[in-house]
Length: 279
Image 1 (cartoon, rainbow, N blue to C red):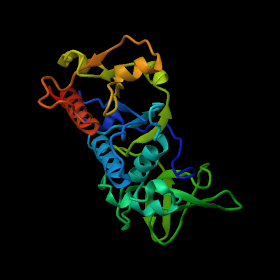
Image 2 (image 1 turned 45 degrees about the horizontal axis):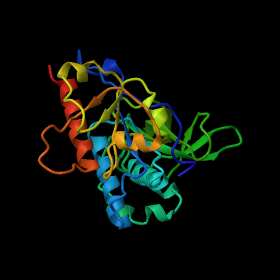
Image 3 (image 1 turned 90 degrees about the vertical axis):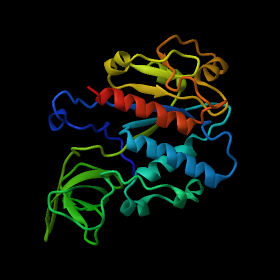
């Protein structure tokens, strides 16, 4: 998906737009490249990635990190599907055809604020793709309607841009930043590097249940999950990583033998979201 997904910094909601005491902190999750190790059917794999995408959209996750697990490295497959799901429907035509996206039709729609209908409204914020750069430097942007919108920008051809619709006739837009949750970014990393981040938390049934005050105190947290076959600590041991940091058990007294990755993500994000917003 090179050329469509930009490399802009993580976009967050301005604190001035939130009610008093409601400061929005960035939540990131890290999942292994072996996240789909128990599945053989590419259609089911795609759907499971879609469940993870939905969880992240529901709980306003800003960044999904896929860390490499040598046991099974499906990083590119997971990344392609996650990025496809996050892309507004009217811009997906710019995504190159790939075998990894063969079953993208089974993905549940995210319906996040950036997924606008084709009908334009003056004042609304939309995603677009720079499809042409004119001789005078004007960028011509596809924002989901027949006509391309002229834009003063330094964005390269193929880059995604966020614009505000100033007029529909004639079509006039200006570059802007979204004032609400706009979707997640996806990137690849090594587990060692992920564990070096500030406020990183490993999730495991072997850990203690976190106190409410501990969850509330963390800003810009990164939650690290294991694979369906191995927990994060088992993966660390196999990779020769020695780490002693913060870890949480967010599903105490689980009633099943194993909690699936997508289930752990939903449960953990729901708890973090609730605790951060409750008075």
